Amino acid sequence: MSKNIEYDINRLRDYSSLFSRNEIQRWQKGNLYSIQKKADRYDKSKFIGSNKSHLNYLQYVYKALENQYRNEYVVKNSFLNQWLVKELGKSHSKAFNEFRVGNAIADLAMFNGVSKAFEIKTELDSDKRLNLQLENYRKVFNQVYLIVPHSKLELYKKYDSEIGIISFESSNKNHFHLKREAQNFNIIDAVEVMKILHGSEYKKIVINHYGSLPKMTSFNQFDICKELIYKIPNNTLNEYFIESMKDRGSDNALSCRFFKEFNQISLALKMNKVQKKELIDILKLPLYN
Amino acid sequence: MYYPFLKARQFELIALRELASENVTQGHVIPILEPVKETLNNLILANTVFREKNQSAYLVLNSNIGSTAGDTSFFIDFIASEESTNYLPAFHYNSNKEYIIKIINQFSLSDCMLICGNDVSSDDPNFRELCELSEVKIINVEDPGRNRDLNRYIRNLNKTYIRLDDPFEKISPNAEYLKIEENRFSEEHIHFRDENYQGFSDYTTLPSLYTEGGSAPRAVVIHLTYKKPDNKIWIKHFTSNTNDSIANVQGKFAEASKKAVEFCRSENKTNSAIAELESYYDEQHYPGLGMVKKISIKNHILVVAEFLKNQS
Image 1 (cartoon, rainbow over the protein chains, first blue to last red):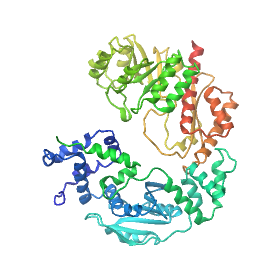
Image 2 (cartoon, rainbow over the protein chains, first blue to last red; image 1 turned 30 degrees about the vertical axis):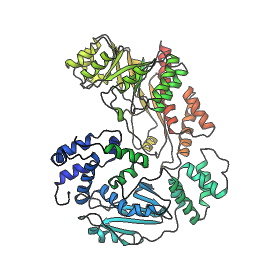
Image 3 (tube, chains in turn green, purple; image 1 turned 60 degrees about the vertical axis):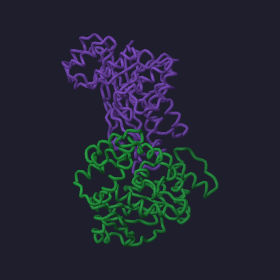
Image 4 (cartoon, rainbow over the protein chains, first blue to last red; image 1 turned 135 degrees about the vertical axis):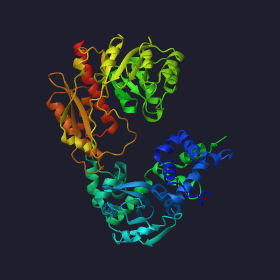
């Protein structure tokens, strides 16, 4: 319904503030005031007497953003919905929002049979840190992808030719196109892998590979396990690393069919299926009685 | 009397429970607890120990921070529902006279604490009305030296008047503490009586600002306060050296605790918090960052309590 209306940029910016971590944590506690406020400010006449819920209103707002305001939340969410959810569905797999590697944080990371990092650069982002980011990601990920607006394709093509590129149309509803396949990086950097693994994770790898843990204290366990992990053949270590990440945290509650507007935030807040359902139930409260 | 102002979180409350169990705070220390979440388990556990050990604590009923912020009745309902409680009511004053009076009357409260910043005007009739209520026994003002009118007004009320200071310097990122060996921390414990206060308050060795969550740190810092021969309290920041990534927090703790334990042993500093730190170090056991915070809080309260005990 919002397709034909051109919204003022300030209104879109105001809308976009609804999809943030703090807002959603407030909704989870039953405080829906912020949604009400935006509806009162912009859309009261459209929704009053319509029996629509807070959820319906958020879906309406999301659609407006998706059509006209492509910030990182919208691009990331569309990419999750149109691309990653399908890939994740195939097998036991795990996705992470914001995955730290060295001095950089990948926007999205995914682990199934291989490990993949995704870096999103919207029209609003600069490429200033990109070389550093890519250098870090390729140390531990088997494939690295850049997600960039179609208009900036030429700029980003100049970067590391082994990096995959996916482009999206800024003006239109997001359609993602694979522009360049990522090359496989077969060697991962064990030093960086050790920095990512939690204590319980690297201990589990040592047990899986060597059968047991050596004698150690919590003070020296990192150094002892590190030496053992450095000796594991690189392709085997890659498999252990991927398995560890797939086991980390609870299952993702992503869906491309149900309430796709909230995929990104449920990933960011590490929500499981039950928590996501609880949130949706809260949002089903009517906006105007 | 010393009034350490702490968030009502798990490790803060464990520190206070342990201190009460060791019978070291009674008579010298009354904590003020500010809730940050609507979870009551830790407050209930602490109340049990406080009752058993005859330790009181103020509970802020209208917290300024976290998910419980605001003039609500959640925490007074909790106090009222407990069969017996050692929690005393405390209120933040932010132009909310009606709320405070309503709660005092509804729950027949006495012995209330009023906490305010130094930006309150002594001419504010609402504030004066509250201060002059017989149910308000104690007034806690943040950095009161900066508002002399207010200072004079409260002093003349002849109530228990305490000052709140924020001597802990939060430095970010944590690794920057490596550059600072130690700082002067506080001397309110020496001067508060001479300056006509009946007590003093601070946020112990924690930052006053509340932040939720947070990720794994690059550096582990053990903040330990200690008393110099002239009775002034200083703070040392024992900081890990390997701070280039978030990996191996256990190793970072090993580095920081080595420095802390070596200092305490060479200077013959000891108390129950330091003894606990020494045992982790000697057994090469990493107890988790919550325990590091607990040790730091306990040590500071012990340093102050011991001074006050020797004065009395």
